[in-house]
Image (cartoon, rainbow, N blue to C red; front, side):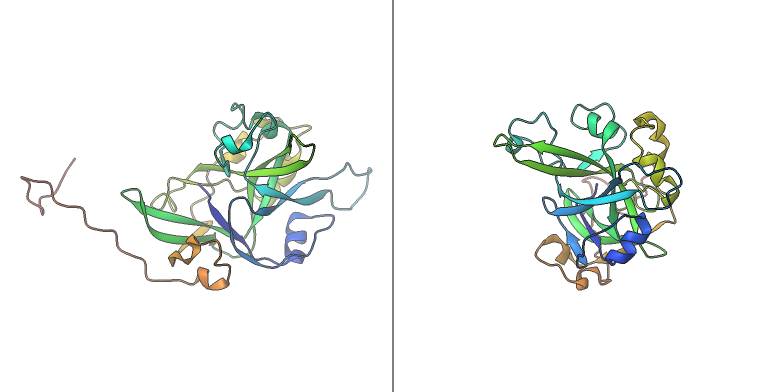
Length: 251
């Protein structure tokens, strides 16, 4: 899954990486949490033939997807992630997967290794070579009963690759720059035409750095939450009754 992430690249770096028409100024964000506004990139208006101008735009959306058919969003779970394997068929995400695919600019994400259902160690997972990364995302504009509108979004996830699976079994979908045009072109590319982009990223793309549990609190927003720490050891499992604790288990 992806429950926290960061965007610490400058607006100029984000604009260049995503080939944006324009972008608003924003400060580094080290601990982006659900329900907060997040930056989403989408296809812009059609360009005139021969134009070399950028053709993508960006906007802020609420991180927490609300489908257009929802009558009372408070009755829905907080939909910050969408499973890429089923998004094209699920009633909640089907329309967005067909018509409103986005890119979510990020510098990396946080994940928690758990033991017995409890978080043991937090990790800052970032591109091994540094720089920015694009997560596959979905957007929906929800019309509230009073008439106002709210743009909302979710990050698509896929199975974790072998480098991340020891931490968590899911990870964000990564869309590479060469695939940006195909992913964002919802006019000519149906979900089946971009299904091949929803695979786990190559194992050497990310590195996972153990960090403190400061990231658990969304009020901690400084760069120190990304400082490397000595990873915690998992609590030892109690030996089963009637068995030698040192006996090797072949099964």
